[in-house]
Amino acid sequence: MIQVLFVILIWVIPIILLTNAYFKMDEEERQEFKSEFKKPLALFCVGLLVIGFLLSLSGNFLAIGLIQHIGATMVFISWFTTSVVNWKKGKTDFIKSAVLILLGVLGIAAYGLMVTYL
Image (tube, rainbow, N blue to C red; front, side, top):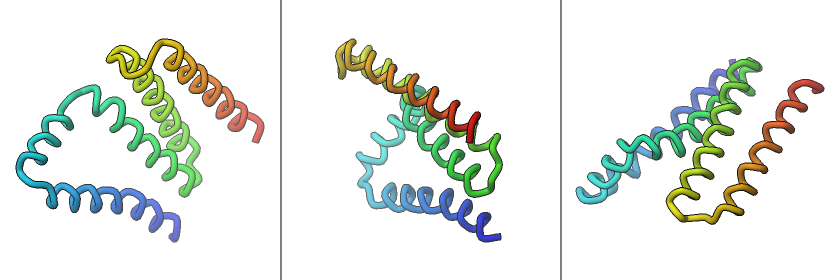
């Protein structure tokens, strides 16, 4: 029963904090937030990261491996997407993006080994 309470809290608290921050914004900031939130890359990079992290935590608290694995996969996809998008936009150079992608591959390998042998 306590696990369900934790899962509810980890999903509700960020929503409450985001809503509170949104209502504190002035009208210009709200319009900018809405336009940024509607962009597919923002949703695919940041949205996938946040939802994946919350799913991974939920799966961990509830001891449901499938939900945890789906969340971890979403986090890794977001990691790759963010690395490539930052490289394409010129925010990072090719070497730095390649290193970040390599770290993502190492993270996937470590996660796979951890799931397989633990």
